[in-house]
Image 1 (cartoon, rainbow, N blue to C red):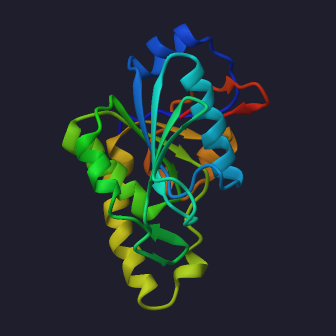
Image 2: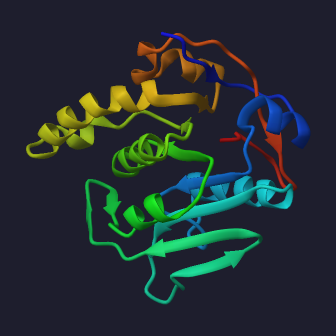
Length: 210
């Protein structure tokens, strides 16, 4: 399979970034939580989004409204944040149907999603297919199967694993946090890694670029 998994550290300037990865200007990032919620993935997403927004990219983030007092839409640090009401939570994931409107209404050149995130990875896959746009994945870890061993979670996981193969195959590029994990990750073993080391330096620290 002709697939590139990118890992490691290399600083690229913004001009080479455009030509080497995106060749685009508008990015739709689909993530279950975003600013002002902070965590490992959330902080990384915010730093990368802010960096790209400051360097000429238009960034749309479609995410959940995890607190009732948050605005449905706001522009913060140049990032267009669109928050949607959570319909339900299950198995450490959230479902917010408002994301469907963003997929159809927004004009974007590229779709990005962080994994593991079963629900949003499916939406990102659909956004990529429906609009015929490239899909970029940042792969943080495999799904912890121990948490999903009991029925009905085990049945849902089996169904998702079938879809998951198509999601990985759809991705134009997959970014991982380290070369070792790219080799050892259970789900990444179905791909043929061709390592290109890419990272972008933000104001505070280095983060993997989607």
